[in-house]
Amino acid sequence: MKNKIIILGVVLILILSAVVLYFQIFKKSELSKPKKELSPVLNIYNWEDYFGTSTIADFEKEFGVKVNLQTYDSEDTMLSAVQSDPTKYDIVIASDILVKEMINMKLLSPINIKNIPNFKNIAKEFKNPFYDAGNKYSVSYLWGTSGLAINRKYIKEQEPSWAIFWNPEYKGKISMLNNMQDVIAVALKYLGYSTNSVNPVELEKAKELLLRQKPLLRGYEDSITIMEDLVSEKLWAGHIYSGDGSFAAAENENIEYLIPKEGGFIWVDNLLIPIGAQHKYTAEVFINYILRPDVSAKIANDLLYANTNEAARQFTNPEILEDASLYPSEEVKKKLEFPGYFGADPAVAIYNQIWAELQ
Image 1 (spheres, rainbow, N blue to C red):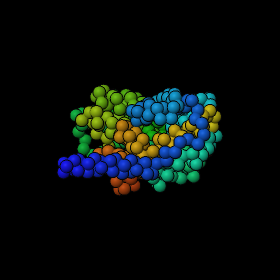
Image 2 (cartoon, rainbow, N blue to C red):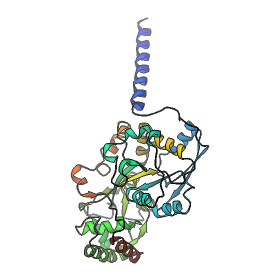
Image 3 (cartoon, helix red, strand yellow):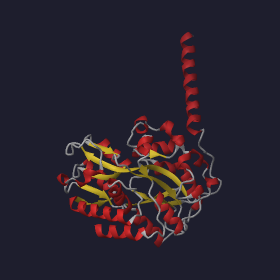
Image 4 (cartoon, one colour):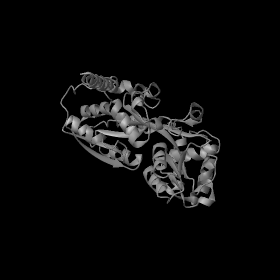
């Protein structure tokens, strides 16, 4: 009898623990059924491998919506696609500064936050951003930095500096991102200037520095290609986004992702709905689903990216939260800058000219 009582007590404890865990997971999450009928399909345009391993399949199973996912390898490709046919996709993902451009180009549909109650889970620092006041058109997704990933087997420098990318010993084993502002920002930061400089003299010096670097590079490439070739050791050093750099480090023990001592860019990727989206309400339901703490944490755990979702932290792997390359200290953050938006500033022409000369 005593044993039966003990067993019963253990069972009750397990049941209570399960109930408590359930409410912990969903206490900050809105799980009510959609208020309106969902569309049978949802068309999404995203970077390759930029959802969790089961994000799409889990959504399809839970909501009965077929997701058509297409991927791009550069934001220029995504922007051109939305410009040519704003009705083709229901959700696209874009970084902060491109969001501002797309708003000005009238390519985005206002988001009905009432349909995204899980928006409350986003950390305060990622709400009401400089590129979209009031989050009228965007919902933040993941964030990170652009820095350098190096293979310690071949690169012995201990000081994390952009100078590595100008070392002739690594000729042909270095790649830079195929992103105009990121690349020019590296040169500006290395020279001690702001990553968002619009000073013609400073930009001229940055151009000269990048032209000296060009013969050393394998090329300007997308972050996924750089990541894969760092892992296979075809590359020894790469200009890369933090999540891809951390993933490369997880796959190859010789790889290390670093935020250079000079500083660099901090960026935020966002979920957006194009102006011609055919399934807008279903897109908002999907965004709300992405912001559920359990879903959001699984994405961060799978991708090794920093998350804008504060409520997801309790379900995020501790090694991610403790990784200083993903969640840099406040001291390091002071050396990081968000990309600037130049609008009609004359500096835009200078940036475009520099980029053209580098191609």
